[in-house]
Length: 386
Ligand SMILES: [Zn+2]
Image (cartoon, rainbow, N blue to C red; front, top):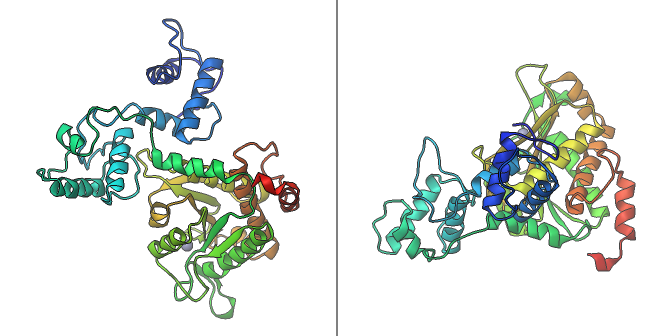
């Protein structure tokens, strides 16, 4: 979709205006051409802040999805599994959160009515003496303790992520980061060459992980590696490690491969289901990492994407997976084999994490914030600002 910002006009702007007016965030203006004016920008910012989105006053895909999801409150419609076109919205999210609160595992609350949500709902219905039909209507809502009160606001889980981020403050010191080097042990991931000349994904990302770990420790952060070089835990085990460590952020490092030697470039991934639900803090962090690395290297832009992969879905904190180039591409491989390049990558990732905690309140252009400046800032800021 096309981004909407101040100065735009037309039907998409009218749709955004109508949604925000309905929520009571924007004063209705009556008939006339729909303009993206200062008032609308302000309303978009308020909405974004409430929803834990990046507060930039611009309507991009994430804000647009959130506006669409926000139309639904629990009780507005019957909720049930539709495998062809799963129901999404704030009502689904509220149901999932309620089921989780009550101890029914509906998976990560993502606002999408999927199979796991249905199963959790059936278990709940069975336990409360209802017929376990997996449909959430008035009777089920009454048992859930929801009937009669309108459930408003949205995405408590993601809002909690955002609130934690705000409370965390701008300092890196004291933050606990789990660095997850992809593969390990018997699984070396992508491998090129053979014998003593073999270059492996596990070897390269293990090295970048250690460089990043060193820089984070120097900045006063607590950096934990998800596993040693001899072990290869499953993605669920890696997520479990991060959860039990109570990490603030998880960074998973990989290198890609392709049958075509021409394929090259950098991609970053955060939790997202493809039908609208996304971890907004994870998306923001993936965006920062992506931009910092692109600005510092000559890698091709392969985008930032939401994926429901286990490591991203099962972690209870923002998690990002980066694919740092293709080992099967000559130029990417040559870059990765240069220790100086791996330092640049580690520095770019660290600066991206710093940007996340600065909450966009930094004016330094992407790619120009140096490691020395990060350390300097950490040293200068009074301890009370923690
Ligand atoms: Zn990998």
